[in-house]
Amino acid sequence: MDPLTRADSDGLEQLDRQTCYDLLSRTSIGRLVFTQGALPAIEPVRFSLDGHDVVVRAEQGLHLPAASRMAVVAFEADAYDEDTRTGWCVVLIGRSRADGDRVRIMPEIVRGRRIRSLPLAAHQDTAVG
Image 1 (cartoon, rainbow, N blue to C red):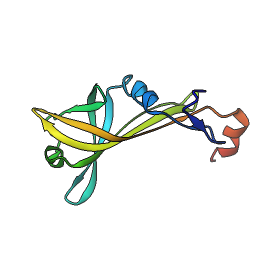
Image 2 (cartoon, rainbow, N blue to C red):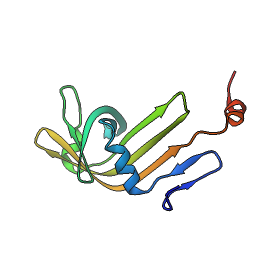
Image 3 (cartoon, rainbow, N blue to C red):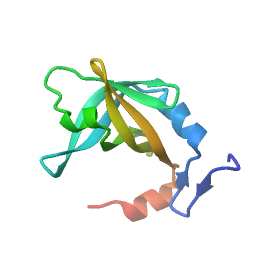
């Protein structure tokens, strides 16, 4: 295990910043979390990385009024493998701004977790049914 990561007894590993960005570079779909009408809103989005910034194309139908005024937003991407019961989740929190027909998220907080496979007996203990 990387010396900058830590895992708990349930196989949940905290990821360092570089590992988070490595995982984000492997996918192009995520979720943008922002405020709309004083309530939290979540939209699935296509994204790319520009250095450490996340760039989201403002596609037709995407309502991001907060994104053009340096609002605090969150961005999340993840992956899960049902067969191995492993996966990861990365969350970025920072300010956003309009950048032409794109929204740029400049993260200040980067958090990630990876779910490691548990022994089969542990899977059976947590099964519902």
